Image (cartoon, rainbow, N blue to C red; front, side, top):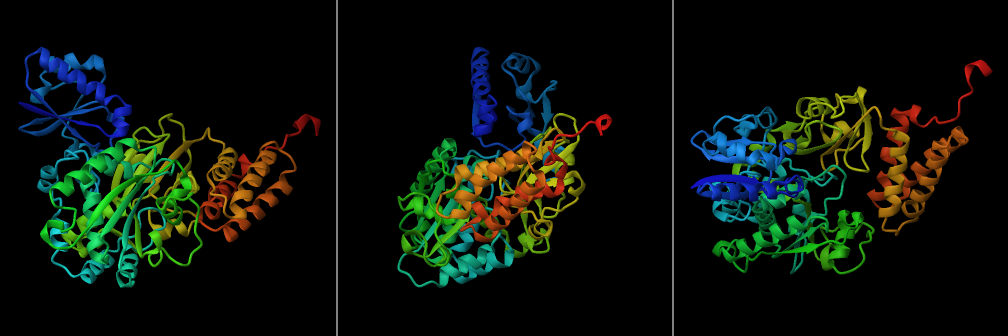
Length: 518
Protein backbone atom coordinates (compact mmCIF):
# COMPACT_ATOMS: atom_id res chain seq x y z
CA UNK A 1 0.00 0.00 0.00
CA UNK A 2 1.37 3.39 -1.01
CA UNK A 3 1.39 6.08 1.66
CA UNK A 4 0.66 9.66 0.68
CA UNK A 5 0.71 12.64 3.01
CA UNK A 6 -1.67 15.61 2.92
CA UNK A 7 -2.00 18.58 5.23
CA UNK A 8 -5.16 19.19 7.24
CA UNK A 9 -3.84 22.54 8.46
CA UNK A 10 -6.58 25.20 8.37
CA UNK A 11 -4.78 27.16 5.63
CA UNK A 12 -4.38 23.99 3.55
CA UNK A 13 -8.06 23.18 3.98
CA UNK A 14 -8.98 26.70 2.89
CA UNK A 15 -6.92 26.14 -0.25
CA UNK A 16 -8.72 22.88 -1.06
CA UNK A 17 -6.64 20.05 0.45
CA UNK A 18 -9.67 18.11 1.71
CA UNK A 19 -11.21 18.06 -1.78
CA UNK A 20 -7.90 16.93 -3.30
CA UNK A 21 -7.56 14.13 -0.73
CA UNK A 22 -11.06 12.89 -1.51
CA UNK A 23 -10.39 12.91 -5.25
CA UNK A 24 -7.10 11.03 -4.77
CA UNK A 25 -8.91 8.35 -2.77
CA UNK A 26 -11.69 8.09 -5.38
CA UNK A 27 -9.29 7.80 -8.31
CA UNK A 28 -7.14 5.22 -6.52
CA UNK A 29 -10.24 3.14 -5.75
CA UNK A 30 -11.39 3.38 -9.38
CA UNK A 31 -8.02 2.03 -10.51
CA UNK A 32 -7.94 -0.69 -7.86
CA UNK A 33 -4.92 0.83 -6.11
CA UNK A 34 -4.34 0.67 -2.34
CA UNK A 35 -3.74 4.15 -0.98
CA UNK A 36 -3.07 5.15 2.64
CA UNK A 37 -3.68 8.90 3.00
CA UNK A 38 -1.88 10.14 6.12
CA UNK A 39 -3.06 13.45 7.57
CA UNK A 40 -0.31 15.84 8.65
CA UNK A 41 0.08 19.51 9.49
CA UNK A 42 1.54 21.95 6.99
CA UNK A 43 5.21 22.62 6.34
CA UNK A 44 4.28 26.24 5.76
CA UNK A 45 4.93 26.60 2.03
CA UNK A 46 1.45 27.93 1.46
CA UNK A 47 1.90 29.10 -2.13
CA UNK A 48 2.38 25.43 -3.07
CA UNK A 49 -0.79 24.23 -1.33
CA UNK A 50 -2.69 22.06 -1.73
CA UNK A 51 0.12 19.59 -2.25
CA UNK A 52 0.57 15.88 -1.81
CA UNK A 53 3.72 14.00 -0.77
CA UNK A 54 4.23 10.39 -1.85
CA UNK A 55 6.41 7.96 0.07
CA UNK A 56 9.05 6.52 -2.29
CA UNK A 57 12.50 4.96 -2.06
CA UNK A 58 13.93 8.45 -2.70
CA UNK A 59 11.96 9.89 0.22
CA UNK A 60 8.76 11.87 0.11
CA UNK A 61 8.18 13.34 -3.33
CA UNK A 62 5.86 16.33 -3.45
CA UNK A 63 3.46 17.52 -6.15
CA UNK A 64 1.64 20.85 -6.10
CA UNK A 65 -0.15 23.14 -6.11
CA UNK A 66 -2.93 20.82 -7.18
CA UNK A 67 -6.33 21.41 -8.74
CA UNK A 68 -9.11 18.81 -9.07
CA UNK A 69 -8.44 18.66 -12.82
CA UNK A 70 -4.84 17.49 -12.15
CA UNK A 71 -5.72 14.24 -10.36
CA UNK A 72 -6.23 11.91 -13.31
CA UNK A 73 -3.06 13.23 -15.01
CA UNK A 74 -1.06 12.57 -11.84
CA UNK A 75 -2.10 8.92 -11.79
CA UNK A 76 -1.43 8.56 -15.52
CA UNK A 77 2.06 10.01 -15.02
CA UNK A 78 2.83 7.52 -12.23
CA UNK A 79 3.07 9.97 -9.37
CA UNK A 80 2.63 7.14 -6.85
CA UNK A 81 6.11 6.02 -7.91
CA UNK A 82 7.48 9.56 -7.81
CA UNK A 83 7.55 9.87 -11.59
CA UNK A 84 7.96 13.11 -13.50
CA UNK A 85 5.08 15.56 -13.95
CA UNK A 86 4.91 19.36 -14.46
CA UNK A 87 3.75 19.71 -10.83
CA UNK A 88 6.49 17.49 -9.40
CA UNK A 89 8.45 19.42 -6.74
CA UNK A 90 10.78 16.65 -5.61
CA UNK A 91 11.73 16.41 -1.95
CA UNK A 92 10.46 19.45 -0.09
CA UNK A 93 13.61 19.43 2.04
CA UNK A 94 15.54 20.29 -1.14
CA UNK A 95 13.35 23.31 -1.92
CA UNK A 96 15.44 26.44 -1.23
CA UNK A 97 12.62 27.84 0.93
CA UNK A 98 13.02 24.94 3.36
CA UNK A 99 16.68 24.08 2.78
CA UNK A 100 17.83 27.50 4.03
CA UNK A 101 15.84 27.25 7.26
CA UNK A 102 16.86 26.06 10.73
CA UNK A 103 13.82 24.21 11.99
CA UNK A 104 13.96 23.37 15.68
CA UNK A 105 10.50 24.23 17.03
CA UNK A 106 8.88 23.24 13.72
CA UNK A 107 11.10 20.25 12.94
CA UNK A 108 8.18 17.79 12.89
CA UNK A 109 5.39 20.02 11.58
CA UNK A 110 4.08 18.74 8.25
CA UNK A 111 5.97 15.48 8.65
CA UNK A 112 4.24 13.57 11.46
CA UNK A 113 0.65 12.53 11.98
CA UNK A 114 -0.39 15.11 14.62
CA UNK A 115 -2.30 12.56 16.71
CA UNK A 116 0.19 9.71 16.55
CA UNK A 117 2.33 9.32 19.67
CA UNK A 118 4.37 6.71 17.83
CA UNK A 119 5.14 9.21 15.08
CA UNK A 120 5.99 11.88 17.63
CA UNK A 121 8.39 9.66 19.58
CA UNK A 122 10.04 8.30 16.43
CA UNK A 123 10.91 11.90 15.45
CA UNK A 124 12.51 12.82 18.78
CA UNK A 125 9.38 13.63 20.73
CA UNK A 126 9.32 13.27 24.53
CA UNK A 127 13.11 13.04 24.73
CA UNK A 128 13.01 16.35 26.59
CA UNK A 129 10.46 15.10 29.13
CA UNK A 130 12.39 11.85 29.58
CA UNK A 131 15.40 13.93 30.64
CA UNK A 132 13.39 16.40 32.73
CA UNK A 133 11.96 13.59 34.84
CA UNK A 134 15.48 12.88 36.13
CA UNK A 135 16.31 16.52 36.89
CA UNK A 136 15.57 18.61 39.95
CA UNK A 137 13.11 21.47 39.30
CA UNK A 138 15.84 24.07 39.72
CA UNK A 139 18.02 22.26 37.18
CA UNK A 140 15.20 22.41 34.60
CA UNK A 141 14.73 26.12 35.24
CA UNK A 142 18.48 26.70 34.97
CA UNK A 143 18.57 24.87 31.64
CA UNK A 144 15.83 27.12 30.23
CA UNK A 145 17.60 30.20 31.60
CA UNK A 146 20.94 29.22 30.06
CA UNK A 147 19.32 28.61 26.68
CA UNK A 148 18.43 32.29 26.43
CA UNK A 149 14.83 31.46 25.45
CA UNK A 150 12.65 34.55 25.58
CA UNK A 151 8.89 34.74 25.36
CA UNK A 152 7.79 34.31 21.76
CA UNK A 153 4.39 35.90 22.35
CA UNK A 154 5.71 39.43 21.90
CA UNK A 155 7.09 40.76 25.18
CA UNK A 156 10.37 38.86 24.87
CA UNK A 157 10.73 38.33 28.64
CA UNK A 158 13.30 35.64 29.61
CA UNK A 159 11.34 32.43 30.03
CA UNK A 160 13.65 30.91 32.62
CA UNK A 161 13.41 33.98 34.87
CA UNK A 162 9.60 33.75 34.87
CA UNK A 163 9.75 30.03 35.67
CA UNK A 164 12.23 30.68 38.49
CA UNK A 165 9.87 33.19 40.08
CA UNK A 166 7.01 30.68 40.08
CA UNK A 167 9.26 27.88 41.33
CA UNK A 168 10.27 29.85 44.43
CA UNK A 169 6.78 31.19 45.15
CA UNK A 170 5.20 29.54 48.18
CA UNK A 171 1.83 28.01 47.33
CA UNK A 172 0.03 24.67 47.61
CA UNK A 173 -1.31 25.03 44.06
CA UNK A 174 0.38 26.49 40.98
CA UNK A 175 -0.71 26.66 37.36
CA UNK A 176 0.71 26.57 33.84
CA UNK A 177 -1.24 28.64 31.30
CA UNK A 178 -0.58 28.68 27.57
CA UNK A 179 -1.60 31.82 25.72
CA UNK A 180 -2.83 30.50 22.37
CA UNK A 181 -5.00 33.54 21.66
CA UNK A 182 -3.00 34.33 18.52
CA UNK A 183 -4.74 37.46 17.23
CA UNK A 184 -2.02 39.52 15.53
CA UNK A 185 -2.46 40.19 11.84
CA UNK A 186 -0.21 38.08 9.66
CA UNK A 187 0.51 35.48 12.36
CA UNK A 188 -0.29 31.78 12.26
CA UNK A 189 2.63 29.91 13.85
CA UNK A 190 0.74 29.03 17.05
CA UNK A 191 -2.11 27.60 15.02
CA UNK A 192 0.27 25.63 12.80
CA UNK A 193 2.01 24.03 15.78
CA UNK A 194 -1.24 23.12 17.55
CA UNK A 195 -2.65 21.61 14.36
CA UNK A 196 0.54 19.99 13.11
CA UNK A 197 2.57 19.03 16.22
CA UNK A 198 0.34 19.33 19.31
CA UNK A 199 2.39 16.92 21.43
CA UNK A 200 5.28 19.43 21.34
CA UNK A 201 3.09 21.93 23.19
CA UNK A 202 1.83 19.27 25.59
CA UNK A 203 5.38 18.11 26.32
CA UNK A 204 6.63 21.67 26.84
CA UNK A 205 3.83 22.49 29.28
CA UNK A 206 4.42 19.23 31.14
CA UNK A 207 8.11 20.08 31.53
CA UNK A 208 7.10 23.53 32.81
CA UNK A 209 4.81 21.89 35.36
CA UNK A 210 7.64 19.68 36.60
CA UNK A 211 9.98 22.69 36.74
CA UNK A 212 7.82 24.93 38.92
CA UNK A 213 5.72 22.42 40.86
CA UNK A 214 2.45 23.00 39.00
CA UNK A 215 0.05 20.09 38.65
CA UNK A 216 -2.53 21.73 36.38
CA UNK A 217 -2.36 23.47 33.01
CA UNK A 218 -4.75 25.28 30.68
CA UNK A 219 -4.46 26.16 27.00
CA UNK A 220 -6.49 29.26 26.09
CA UNK A 221 -7.21 29.09 22.35
CA UNK A 222 -8.76 31.85 20.26
CA UNK A 223 -12.29 31.12 19.08
CA UNK A 224 -11.31 31.50 15.41
CA UNK A 225 -9.15 28.34 15.68
CA UNK A 226 -11.68 25.46 15.78
CA UNK A 227 -9.31 23.03 14.01
CA UNK A 228 -6.50 23.74 16.49
CA UNK A 229 -8.92 23.40 19.38
CA UNK A 230 -10.17 20.01 18.21
CA UNK A 231 -6.72 18.65 17.36
CA UNK A 232 -5.11 19.75 20.61
CA UNK A 233 -8.03 18.51 22.71
CA UNK A 234 -7.78 15.08 21.05
CA UNK A 235 -3.98 15.05 21.49
CA UNK A 236 -4.40 15.73 25.22
CA UNK A 237 -6.76 12.74 25.45
CA UNK A 238 -4.23 10.54 23.62
CA UNK A 239 -1.38 11.69 25.88
CA UNK A 240 -3.45 11.10 29.01
CA UNK A 241 -4.41 7.56 27.93
CA UNK A 242 -0.74 6.76 27.31
CA UNK A 243 0.35 8.04 30.73
CA UNK A 244 2.08 11.22 29.57
CA UNK A 245 -0.48 13.26 31.51
CA UNK A 246 -2.32 12.42 34.70
CA UNK A 247 -1.81 11.73 38.39
CA UNK A 248 1.61 10.17 37.75
CA UNK A 249 3.35 11.31 34.57
CA UNK A 250 5.09 8.24 33.09
CA UNK A 251 4.95 6.59 36.50
CA UNK A 252 7.05 9.32 38.14
CA UNK A 253 4.58 10.06 40.92
CA UNK A 254 4.41 13.68 39.73
CA UNK A 255 1.04 14.91 38.54
CA UNK A 256 0.24 17.13 35.59
CA UNK A 257 -3.08 17.44 33.78
CA UNK A 258 -4.14 19.68 30.90
CA UNK A 259 -7.37 21.23 29.66
CA UNK A 260 -8.25 23.40 26.66
CA UNK A 261 -10.41 26.52 26.86
CA UNK A 262 -11.91 28.38 23.90
CA UNK A 263 -11.93 32.18 23.91
CA UNK A 264 -14.78 34.35 22.67
CA UNK A 265 -13.07 36.47 20.02
CA UNK A 266 -11.58 39.27 22.14
CA UNK A 267 -8.15 40.45 20.96
CA UNK A 268 -7.43 41.87 24.42
CA UNK A 269 -7.40 38.34 25.84
CA UNK A 270 -4.00 37.94 24.21
CA UNK A 271 -2.81 40.16 27.10
CA UNK A 272 -1.92 37.76 29.90
CA UNK A 273 -3.96 39.29 32.73
CA UNK A 274 -7.08 39.72 30.57
CA UNK A 275 -6.63 36.08 29.55
CA UNK A 276 -6.53 35.05 33.22
CA UNK A 277 -9.70 37.03 33.91
CA UNK A 278 -11.41 35.22 31.04
CA UNK A 279 -10.18 31.82 32.26
CA UNK A 280 -11.69 32.58 35.64
CA UNK A 281 -15.07 33.17 33.99
CA UNK A 282 -15.11 36.95 33.97
CA UNK A 283 -15.04 39.55 31.20
CA UNK A 284 -11.56 39.82 29.69
CA UNK A 285 -10.25 43.04 31.21
CA UNK A 286 -6.67 43.97 31.99
CA UNK A 287 -5.45 43.74 35.57
CA UNK A 288 -3.11 46.31 37.06
CA UNK A 289 0.43 44.99 37.71
CA UNK A 290 1.81 44.38 40.29
CA UNK A 291 1.03 41.79 41.47
CA UNK A 292 2.58 39.80 38.67
CA UNK A 293 0.85 36.62 37.42
CA UNK A 294 3.98 34.69 38.41
CA UNK A 295 3.06 35.43 42.04
CA UNK A 296 -0.69 36.09 41.91
CA UNK A 297 -2.09 34.67 38.69
CA UNK A 298 -4.87 32.22 37.89
CA UNK A 299 -7.29 32.01 40.84
CA UNK A 300 -4.76 34.05 42.81
CA UNK A 301 -2.08 31.34 42.60
CA UNK A 302 1.49 31.52 41.16
CA UNK A 303 1.14 30.99 37.41
CA UNK A 304 3.46 30.56 34.45
CA UNK A 305 1.91 32.24 31.41
CA UNK A 306 3.78 31.60 28.16
CA UNK A 307 3.03 31.53 24.46
CA UNK A 308 2.58 28.37 22.34
CA UNK A 309 5.97 28.79 20.67
CA UNK A 310 7.75 29.30 24.00
CA UNK A 311 6.38 26.03 25.42
CA UNK A 312 6.81 24.29 22.05
CA UNK A 313 10.53 25.09 22.02
CA UNK A 314 11.28 23.82 25.54
CA UNK A 315 11.33 20.09 24.57
CA UNK A 316 14.13 20.75 22.05
CA UNK A 317 16.14 22.61 24.69
CA UNK A 318 15.79 19.83 27.26
CA UNK A 319 16.55 17.14 24.68
CA UNK A 320 19.63 18.81 23.16
CA UNK A 321 20.88 21.04 25.95
CA UNK A 322 20.79 24.75 26.68
CA UNK A 323 24.07 25.51 24.96
CA UNK A 324 23.01 23.84 21.71
CA UNK A 325 20.04 26.22 21.57
CA UNK A 326 22.00 29.28 22.67
CA UNK A 327 24.51 28.65 19.88
CA UNK A 328 21.91 29.97 17.44
CA UNK A 329 21.03 33.66 17.24
CA UNK A 330 22.75 36.93 18.10
CA UNK A 331 23.38 39.18 21.13
CA UNK A 332 20.49 38.71 23.61
CA UNK A 333 18.23 37.04 21.05
CA UNK A 334 19.18 33.37 21.20
CA UNK A 335 17.86 30.36 19.36
CA UNK A 336 15.50 30.46 16.40
CA UNK A 337 12.51 32.60 15.51
CA UNK A 338 9.46 31.23 13.66
CA UNK A 339 8.73 34.04 11.20
CA UNK A 340 5.33 34.35 9.58
CA UNK A 341 5.52 36.10 6.22
CA UNK A 342 2.28 37.46 4.80
CA UNK A 343 0.75 40.35 2.89
CA UNK A 344 1.83 41.37 -0.60
CA UNK A 345 4.43 38.65 -1.25
CA UNK A 346 4.79 35.92 -3.84
CA UNK A 347 5.67 33.20 -1.35
CA UNK A 348 4.01 33.64 2.04
CA UNK A 349 4.51 31.06 4.74
CA UNK A 350 6.35 29.88 7.85
CA UNK A 351 10.10 30.47 8.04
CA UNK A 352 12.17 29.37 11.05
CA UNK A 353 15.63 30.90 11.23
CA UNK A 354 18.22 31.82 13.82
CA UNK A 355 17.81 35.41 15.00
CA UNK A 356 19.70 37.92 12.89
CA UNK A 357 18.29 37.57 9.37
CA UNK A 358 17.34 40.93 7.86
CA UNK A 359 13.90 41.99 6.70
CA UNK A 360 15.30 42.25 3.17
CA UNK A 361 16.47 38.62 3.22
CA UNK A 362 13.08 37.44 4.45
CA UNK A 363 11.08 39.42 1.89
CA UNK A 364 13.32 38.89 -1.14
CA UNK A 365 15.08 35.56 -0.62
CA UNK A 366 12.13 33.74 0.92
CA UNK A 367 9.11 35.79 -0.11
CA UNK A 368 10.29 36.46 -3.67
CA UNK A 369 9.31 40.12 -3.48
CA UNK A 370 5.82 41.52 -3.85
CA UNK A 371 3.07 39.49 -5.50
CA UNK A 372 2.12 42.53 -7.60
CA UNK A 373 5.67 43.11 -8.82
CA UNK A 374 5.52 46.68 -7.55
CA UNK A 375 8.20 48.07 -5.20
CA UNK A 376 7.98 47.42 -1.45
CA UNK A 377 6.86 50.56 0.31
CA UNK A 378 6.31 49.46 3.90
CA UNK A 379 6.72 46.40 6.09
CA UNK A 380 4.86 46.03 9.38
CA UNK A 381 6.62 43.86 11.94
CA UNK A 382 4.95 42.65 15.11
CA UNK A 383 1.23 42.62 14.37
CA UNK A 384 -1.33 45.45 14.21
CA UNK A 385 0.50 47.33 16.97
CA UNK A 386 3.90 46.98 15.28
CA UNK A 387 5.85 49.70 13.50
CA UNK A 388 5.92 50.31 9.75
CA UNK A 389 9.42 50.22 8.28
CA UNK A 390 10.18 51.88 4.93
CA UNK A 391 12.13 50.15 2.15
CA UNK A 392 15.24 52.11 3.20
CA UNK A 393 15.29 50.28 6.56
CA UNK A 394 14.96 46.69 5.39
CA UNK A 395 18.53 45.97 6.44
CA UNK A 396 17.37 45.82 10.08
CA UNK A 397 18.04 42.37 11.61
CA UNK A 398 15.25 40.44 13.29
CA UNK A 399 16.47 40.84 16.85
CA UNK A 400 14.61 42.17 19.90
CA UNK A 401 17.06 44.95 20.68
CA UNK A 402 17.85 45.89 17.06
CA UNK A 403 14.17 46.49 16.31
CA UNK A 404 13.62 48.35 19.59
CA UNK A 405 16.54 50.65 18.73
CA UNK A 406 14.63 51.63 15.59
CA UNK A 407 11.39 52.25 17.49
CA UNK A 408 9.90 48.92 16.47
CA UNK A 409 9.18 45.56 18.05
CA UNK A 410 9.50 41.93 17.06
CA UNK A 411 6.22 40.86 18.63
CA UNK A 412 5.10 37.38 17.64
CA UNK A 413 7.29 37.33 14.52
CA UNK A 414 4.64 38.37 12.01
CA UNK A 415 5.77 40.31 8.93
CA UNK A 416 3.21 41.93 6.61
CA UNK A 417 4.45 43.44 3.33
CA UNK A 418 2.86 46.38 1.44
CA UNK A 419 3.71 47.66 -2.03
CA UNK A 420 3.78 51.31 -3.13
CA UNK A 421 0.01 51.49 -3.56
CA UNK A 422 -0.59 51.56 0.21
CA UNK A 423 -1.67 54.76 1.96
CA UNK A 424 0.08 54.88 5.34
CA UNK A 425 -2.22 57.61 6.68
CA UNK A 426 -5.13 55.20 6.27
CA UNK A 427 -3.07 52.46 7.92
CA UNK A 428 -2.47 54.79 10.86
CA UNK A 429 -6.20 55.41 11.07
CA UNK A 430 -6.76 51.65 11.07
CA UNK A 431 -4.47 51.29 14.11
CA UNK A 432 -6.71 53.64 16.10
CA UNK A 433 -9.87 52.02 14.74
CA UNK A 434 -8.58 48.57 15.71
CA UNK A 435 -7.71 49.77 19.22
CA UNK A 436 -11.11 51.41 19.66
CA UNK A 437 -12.86 48.17 18.70
CA UNK A 438 -10.66 45.84 20.75
CA UNK A 439 -9.95 47.89 23.88
CA UNK A 440 -11.20 46.28 27.09
CA UNK A 441 -12.38 49.75 28.14
CA UNK A 442 -10.76 49.73 31.57
CA UNK A 443 -8.46 52.72 31.14
CA UNK A 444 -9.37 56.11 29.68
CA UNK A 445 -6.24 56.72 27.54
CA UNK A 446 -6.94 53.57 25.50
CA UNK A 447 -10.76 53.62 25.53
CA UNK A 448 -11.17 57.31 24.67
CA UNK A 449 -7.80 58.00 23.08
CA UNK A 450 -8.33 55.49 20.27
CA UNK A 451 -11.70 57.06 19.38
CA UNK A 452 -10.19 60.56 19.37
CA UNK A 453 -7.35 59.16 17.24
CA UNK A 454 -9.78 58.02 14.54
CA UNK A 455 -11.35 61.49 14.53
CA UNK A 456 -7.98 63.25 14.25
CA UNK A 457 -6.88 60.95 11.43
CA UNK A 458 -10.13 61.62 9.57
CA UNK A 459 -9.38 65.35 9.71
CA UNK A 460 -5.80 64.82 8.54
CA UNK A 461 -6.91 62.58 5.66
CA UNK A 462 -9.44 65.23 4.67
CA UNK A 463 -6.62 67.81 4.58
CA UNK A 464 -8.13 69.91 7.38
CA UNK A 465 -5.69 72.17 9.31
CA UNK A 466 -2.87 69.71 8.81
CA UNK A 467 -0.25 71.31 11.06
CA UNK A 468 -2.63 71.70 14.02
CA UNK A 469 -4.06 68.20 13.71
CA UNK A 470 -0.63 66.56 13.39
CA UNK A 471 0.33 68.30 16.64
CA UNK A 472 -2.82 66.96 18.30
CA UNK A 473 -1.97 63.51 16.91
CA UNK A 474 1.53 63.59 18.38
CA UNK A 475 0.26 64.77 21.77
CA UNK A 476 -2.40 62.05 21.80
CA UNK A 477 0.17 59.36 20.98
CA UNK A 478 2.42 60.54 23.80
CA UNK A 479 -0.49 60.39 26.24
CA UNK A 480 -1.54 56.90 25.17
CA UNK A 481 2.04 55.62 25.34
CA UNK A 482 2.69 57.00 28.81
CA UNK A 483 -0.68 56.52 30.52
CA UNK A 484 -2.34 53.37 29.14
CA UNK A 485 -2.71 50.46 31.53
CA UNK A 486 -1.42 47.82 29.10
CA UNK A 487 0.21 47.39 25.71
CA UNK A 488 -3.10 47.66 23.84
CA UNK A 489 -3.23 51.44 24.28
CA UNK A 490 0.47 51.84 24.97
CA UNK A 491 1.56 50.37 21.64
CA UNK A 492 -1.17 51.69 19.36
CA UNK A 493 0.91 54.87 18.79
CA UNK A 494 3.78 52.73 17.45
CA UNK A 495 2.29 52.09 13.98
CA UNK A 496 0.82 55.61 13.92
CA UNK A 497 4.05 57.45 14.70
CA UNK A 498 6.18 55.18 12.50
CA UNK A 499 3.82 55.91 9.59
CA UNK A 500 3.98 59.65 10.28
CA UNK A 501 7.77 59.60 10.69
CA UNK A 502 8.68 57.51 7.65
CA UNK A 503 5.83 58.41 5.29
CA UNK A 504 4.96 62.09 5.99
CA UNK A 505 3.88 62.58 2.38
CA UNK A 506 0.88 60.29 2.99
CA UNK A 507 -0.34 62.59 5.76
CA UNK A 508 -0.13 65.80 3.74
CA UNK A 509 -3.51 65.67 1.99
CA UNK A 510 -4.08 69.44 1.90
CA UNK A 511 -5.44 70.54 -1.50
CA UNK A 512 -2.76 72.01 -3.73
CA UNK A 513 -3.10 75.29 -5.63
CA UNK A 514 -2.21 74.71 -9.30
CA UNK A 515 1.12 76.32 -10.22
CA UNK A 516 -0.54 78.48 -12.96
CA UNK A 517 -2.83 80.06 -10.38
CA UNK A 518 -0.05 81.04 -7.97
